[in-house]
Length: 113
Image (cartoon, rainbow, N blue to C red; front, top):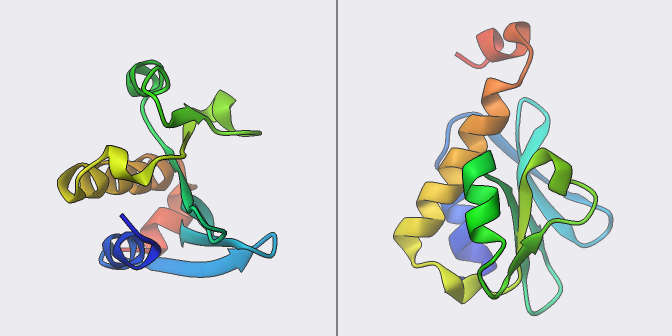
């Protein structure tokens, strides 16, 4: 999986914005909150939010670690982007989007509909 493929998945979701943060991270956001971060330095690494159950299951796989600074919020860092096929990538990115969107304030969520 490459940056363009991940960007395509993210940008197909409703109300997504993107921006560069910290100089070299491409961030995808819903309502101003990040749901996917792609490090633009090769080899690319991707951070996404997962469920509590998935966090424990995924972080024991080689190439996936708890994301620095945000692991307590169940974010993972995928260091080996070949670990998932496109279907799995789509699933986990969309799930991250929905997890983050569900935590937005009601007023913000209402503006997105």
